[in-house]
Amino acid sequence: MKSLQDYFKELDNQNKAVLAVNFYNFETLSAILSAAKATESAVILQSTKNTIDYLGLDVTANLAKTAIQQYDVQAWLHLDHAEDIDLIKRALDAGYDSVMIDASEEPFEENCKITREVVETAAPYGANVEAELGYIAKLGQSKENASFTQPEEAQEFVDKTGVDALAIAIGSAHGFYDKEPNLDTKLVDRIRKNTAAALVLHGGSGIPDSQIEKAIQNGIRKINVATEVKNGFMNTLREELPKTSEIDLRKVFPKAIKHVQQLLTKKMEMVNQA
Image 1 (cartoon, rainbow, N blue to C red):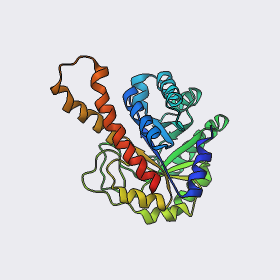
Image 2 (cartoon, helix red, strand yellow):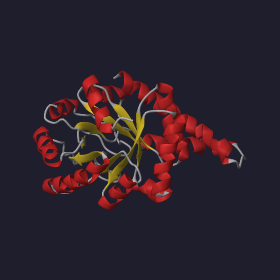
Image 3 (cartoon, rainbow, N blue to C red):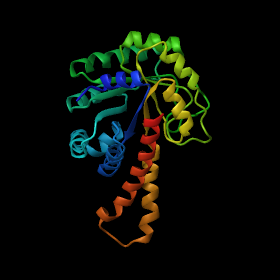
Image 4 (cartoon, rainbow, N blue to C red):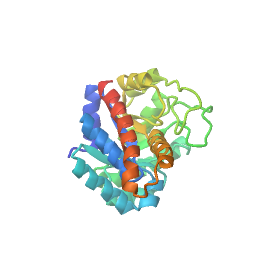
């Protein structure tokens, strides 16, 4: 299978993007891969430290890798928002294709230093490395204190670290939006012209399709989606459980799986056509 770095280069040549979706259990993993299969899309499967703490690292990695083979889709396994270099090392040993080091809340030079260490650590594995530059609000953080990524800063960061992919701050945020976001898609184009790193949009849940399409056209190559998966899955279960006395979870979960699959099918079709 081709490396994620090579796939990003293909996407850049075609001016396209790939959806990267967080999974939390077999059910959400199945929904993601079913949508990828139905739309003939490549996909990046993302897990966070919280998912690894829940499932265990080996179970998380092996579950994803086995499911990729079962569904026969082009997919890569990515560690999302890791802050611990030891976890990154263990994920690489477990067979992750890609890792993200998030030192974005550190001063610029410290972010560079930490990211460079991860790039050097991942090199023998041939793994893709993603970092974050700028302020992209996390859950519970204010969305008002925007600090957008600047093109010259992005260029310096990539030059100093050698990172393959860069999550940039252009007006998105993690979690739910209080109001419709307004992405600075022109900034994406300016950053793209200053660096060869694959540009990543975090906080893809809840952003209007038209803005995502424009961001792709201007240089975004990877779009992260997580909140809509969790929210859609749980809301479907909340609707279905009062209607049934069924105790076999294998008969209850499929409706939630189908909901997430349909949601992601639409998103993948949109991304593919952008």
